[in-house]
Image 1: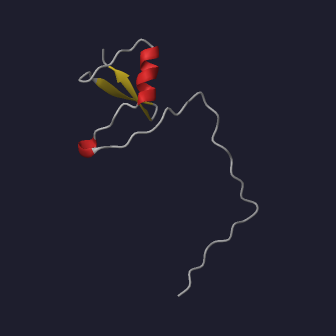
Image 2: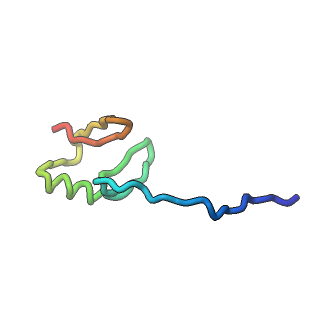
Length: 74
């Protein structure tokens, strides 16, 4: 049994992602029991904005226009 793969057509064009003001700070892996870590780059950016977070502090997850944001609750 042979598998037929579609041929790539020269008329197909790939457009880059639209440029935005967004910057990817990094990624984190979901751990056991759906836990995530606040990566170093995010912690440093928050410190630059005078947001001090410590272990045990709470953050909130906010949905706006289909995107999810993390905000400190202090």
